[in-house]
Image (cartoon, rainbow, N blue to C red):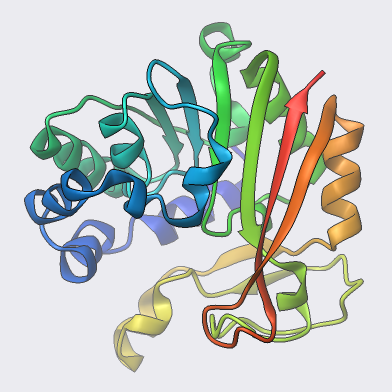
Length: 251
């Protein structure tokens, strides 16, 4: 595991379980919301799935299971890959409370066990802003391709690259040249929700932000056919781009 991955692991295991309880409710409370309307809990991502029942989904950097549990409730066979043991604890407890089963593999995404998972999934799905955690997007997209069966689908929803030059999502991340290729140190996603003294204690992450062309060219260059590329408005200002979703097929 590379040094920056270990740094990310420390950041994402800092108070994570208790953070989810404070912000999303206890696992039982979260499960009740998921059961009530799992499609609504998938938000805009639901429309990108052709079907759910029996579909093998790899949820990449699936965090606390906020999308994995609704997918499982809709009938999908979900495996979460994430670096945080604290995230796993919350996700597994939520799944149990919802009466569904998910598999949760705590690992570096770049070191997924390919003896077990190569050509295993119908869909690889990621959302919530994860690409900036990986410093070699081509190596990342290669892993995504290898996880999929022939004809499988990747649903990659992420922060819009516009956020490199404008903090359109109010994530309190530094801005830079749109074309910057620098790796920079920044706070982990939840740091802004803590008071000053605790915030200083939270381990930092090392980020690399990509342009639209870098993302699209990496998808195309690693065995995918790009089927769709949608841009979504910022939740803070609907006049600005906030997120995108790329849908691509293997082969």
